[in-house]
Length: 294
Image (cartoon, rainbow, N blue to C red):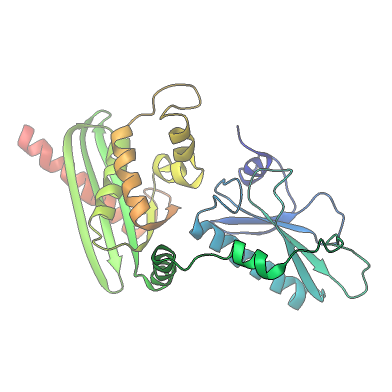
């Protein structure tokens, strides 16, 4: 069942929206305890900062910074306080408290000293600089400088099931590569999945990849974290039915773990030139199959 923040993201519960992009939402806390008290959340559900994927955490902090700068530079506040408390709603969120000098608000409760030996405590809590942790740091730096690739995909089917085609366009800087293929007996959803899978598999090194698809079936599985729920439920839907196309979802998951993927839903058969090219390539694959089977 969706948490209250997931329902706010979906528009099922109204909110006093401050900022929204593809990844995050910022809105006023209805507690109305401090003027401008704002919550910043990832649109993709995660319980807390510990299980929040790095890219989602980065998006949240970028929005926190944007909102904080806006409040202090444009809205007349002197500073902001930040806090992360997930006790009431199990969906990772950051509190932004705009502050004015002399507002009399005590954000942080103070406690008396407990007499710890801070040197001994630091030794106990210090993160070991093992080779594993060193690799983690190197990996983070590599992610910052990793190449960014744009992947447009589309799938098509003549009959459902029937002859099917898939296609993708990979773009890296000024370079572009078209890929396509088809199957004799398949479905539209499988072709949409195949287009993304093969596109990601064609990328030899781990990269940041922006995937654009007109398939809500594919995009929403990740944006709305259906995929996470399916895995937790042993690949069953909320209605206790087996998830369709498990083989392809698992194959796609391998690639999403290899790359840092961002998902974008585009309107199909509209004015998006790359999406239309993918559609034409996919349908050309169906025509090839039709010729060979006639």
